[in-house]
Length: 88
Image (cartoon, rainbow, N blue to C red; front, side):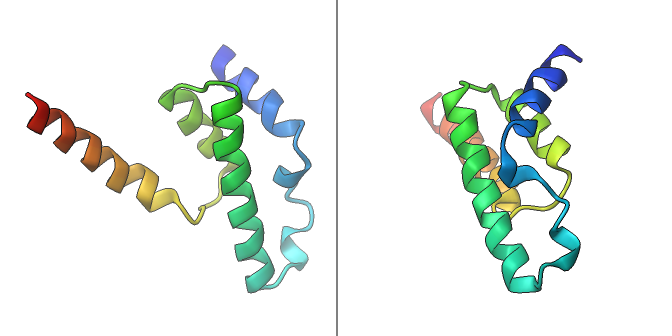
């Protein structure tokens, strides 16, 4: 619960995560906003040295699909697992 609160405080401090105008945006604008949010989320993760669990919590708190979601949830996980298997 403490982790969720810490991550939520960081997300609330960033204007890019404000969803109040989502309803009025067209599909192109929504995709551009999603790219901006994904980039900001990655930068915040590096700035605050988030663990994978904290980064996952941030994604859940944003609660909308991002343009990098599949890559982060499947592709990178698979690469890491394969890397560990080959290193052994």
